[in-house]
Structure formats: structure tokens, C-alpha cells
Picture 1 (spheres, helix red, strand yellow):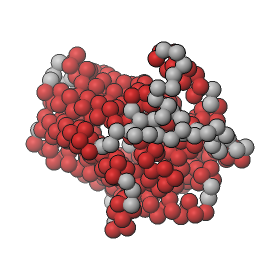
Picture 2 (cartoon, rainbow, N blue to C red; picture 1 turned 135 degrees about the vertical axis):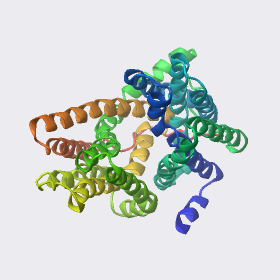
Picture 3 (spheres, helix red, strand yellow; picture 1 turned 45 degrees about the vertical axis):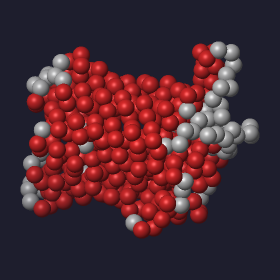
Picture 4 (cartoon, rainbow, N blue to C red; picture 1 turned 180 degrees about the horizontal axis):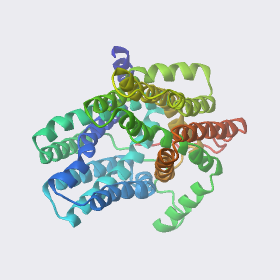
Length: 432
């Protein structure tokens, strides 16, 4: 850990602050969101479809507005969007804890989603700009802080929700309020040099920019190829816990196995990300690292596939081990694949953008992957249901393995044909 903090201190203040900001953002978000559904259905007594609607509005408002958020960041500056997102999430989370009417809940949920769409592209574009040639290593460190927030947030939320969910909401809102104040005071202003370079009036300028990005074929092909990485990594929250509970049940043993699953996923990234990135950077080109990362994520489901050939014990330690060990190993391999791919993925987006309209590229990329996650999760759910109905437990794991290897093959093709290289145009640097 000492080496980690030494690396962090080697960057400019703005980069260090963005990393701490992301940890705090994830801390505040994940201390609340895992318990929101239980609050809506339990404390407020809402019907299941209403709970799904409230949660769906949050996801839709975030995924659907990423492109707009990235565009605003490129045109107005990164700092205003980061601050606006944190202020909006402050209001949204406070409202979730204080209201019980459906319109207010929907408005608060939409606000929390829009907040993410505002600050996520801006943070990544800002980090890429200020990290400069060291952005691969910077994104590796960024992922450490990102995962640390995901790991710690639910633990803090569990303690606070044990008192009252409203306390959780208000504490989370206070965290975002404090974060807003710190960023207003300490985060330097930063904007893309593309700001102000418009063709005609503002609306025409935006449309022209979007058309230009949509004409960037290598970027679009890369975005589609990377969808699989997000679908696969999301299975830590979907297919793997469901498999644990299918075999281990919903009792204390099943809950403990799911907790181990999440802990392994988060801790492995915190402890290993920078080492994995340094090792890969010394040996592979970015495209080669991406291919290996996606392949590792696809092969992560092999332990679950092999486990389907093992007879299921009726009870005892054997049943618990069968329920816990293969999913945990899969989670570890998924984390390893993500550690390999993520820093090079973020760097590749910047390179394919030609250092122009970086936040807008991140916004469109997030939207494409977000749509892919939704479709992928529907497909995974259908595969899980079909596997149970047909008595074919291997079906979901074969499907997910095939997805990972297909995406790795697609990235290999893009790398071999030179489509992951930076365009020939001169890059535009960010300016203060």
C-alpha cells in the first residue's frame, strides 16, 4: 500500500483529487443503492413493479444522458459538470430518504442517474488530460480507488441502514454535499481546447460533433467489441450470486458465500491492479493487453462450467464448497481480466478520439456499453431460466465463455488491422 500512495503522490494535485473524488462518489453511492429496493418494498410497501420502475428510471436517466453529459463537459468545461453532478446527487439522495410519494421518488431517482451522466465522462476526460503520457498508470490507480469505494460503501450502508434507511440517505447526501464544496474550492478549472470550436451556432456545432464521432468507425467498432467486458463483469452482481444461492440457499451460509464473492472481487483489484498494469505494460501493446483481458474474462466461467459435472452433495461442507468455490474463482478471474483491460481500454478511447472531444467520446462509449449491459443481462437471465427448465446447468456458462472469447477475437482483429491505433490528425491538448 505504501507503494500505491507513492504512485498517487507522483501525480499533479488535480489527478490526486479526482481519484479521491471517485472513491468518495462510489462510497456515497454504494452505501445507499444496494438497500434502496428493500426500503421501497419494505418500509414504503410499494409494489414490485413500482420498485422496478424507480430503479429503472435511475438507470435509464444515466445511460440515456451520458452522451449529453460528455458533450456538455467538452463545451462548458470538466469542472462544472463534475460539481453539477455531485450537487444533483446530493439533492437526489436526500429526497429519496425524505419522500414517499411516487412522483417525488421518480424525480429523485432520475436526478441521481442524471448526476452520474454529468460527472462520469467529465472525470475520465479530466483525468486523461492531466495525466498526459502516464494516463494508463493513472487509470490503473483510478480503478483502485473506484473499487475501494464499491467495497467499503455497502459495509458503511449496512451499519447505517441498521439504524434507519433515511439516515443512510442523509449521510450519503452529506458526503456528496461535502464533495461538491471541496471540488468547488480545490479542483482547478479544466476545459477541452475543442470548447468554442463550433460550426455555426451551438446546436449545429453539437450535431456536427456527434456526426463526426459517429463517423469514427474504429471507435464504434471498439465500443461494440468492449460491450462483452461489461456484460461479463456485471455477472458478479447477477449470475454468480444467483448460482451461489441456487446451490447454497438463502440462509446464512449462502449470504456468507456471496459476501466472500464480493470481497474477493474488490480486494483483488485494490491489491493487484497497479502490479498487473505494470506487468502488462512492460510486455504487451495496448491491443494485446485488451485481447488478453477479454479472454481472461471469458475463461473466468470455466470453473463454473466444470462444476456442473460434479454431483451436488445434499448438505454439509461439500455443498457449501461447491456453491462458493467456483463462483469465487470466477469472480477472481473476472477481476483479473478487468485489471488487465481497464487502463488500456480507457487509454484507447482517448487515442481513438485523437484527443478531441474526449468527454463526448466517453459519453457515447458509456451509452453503447450501457445498452449492451441491459441486453446482455436479459440474455443471461434467459439463459439461466432456460438452463433450469431444461436441466442444462452448463448452458449459461458456455454462453458467457463464448461471449468473452468472441469479444477477444474481435479485439484481436481490430488490433491486427491497426484500428486501435491513434488517428493521424494532430491532437488537441486540454487547457486551463
